[in-house]
Length: 280
Figure 1 (cartoon, one colour):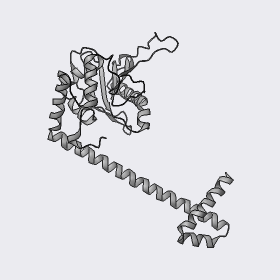
Figure 2 (spheres, rainbow, N blue to C red):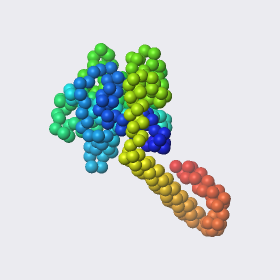
Figure 3 (cartoon, helix red, strand yellow):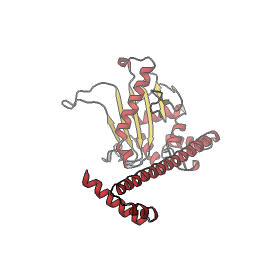
């Protein structure tokens, strides 16, 4: 969840990206530029689609989820750099998204042999693979013969706004540059900039963003409190184990002194940990 003020949001922020992509013409043109294809028509199965496969399963809310006239599914997400763990998990996250999309289609009655061709697209404001490329495209190929494709029609693409655009198609380079710098340099990125401005003037979306921000802070606060409670519980268990250890050695005076002297208690805990390590 982004922690910026609503007025500071740009297209690179997933909340605004999801709202701007609700404009069908903008969404269609964005996909055409990203993928270098022509699309006749797109439809939205659901706005900002949430996919949940099981009652207790982990659900995901997709920034952009559309189908074209040929029933090809497109899922595009903005990804700003987070922790190193988040970056490392991005390939597995793309696999997870792909799996949920496929299962969602099957739940609607599609047999596996009729699964739609699909694109899972991440637009990253960092280089996810550290090779300086503006685009990384993945499809399943045979390792023994890389000319042999699996033809499962699942495509995963990672764009890098910090990549080298010199060899990129002109419109794609300008789109990625706009996402990176927030400075439009083409007719379409001017249109995008205007749409971002309109989105930030939408009072309903402002309220929605504030609710999400409040929820995010509440969850962080709750997690910190749970962590403190767990820490307290672990601390109590450790002291109980220490007291049991001392009682077995008939060191009652040490138990009494440690209850009043925190430094002495730490010293005894160190002794207890050494004893545990030696007995392990």
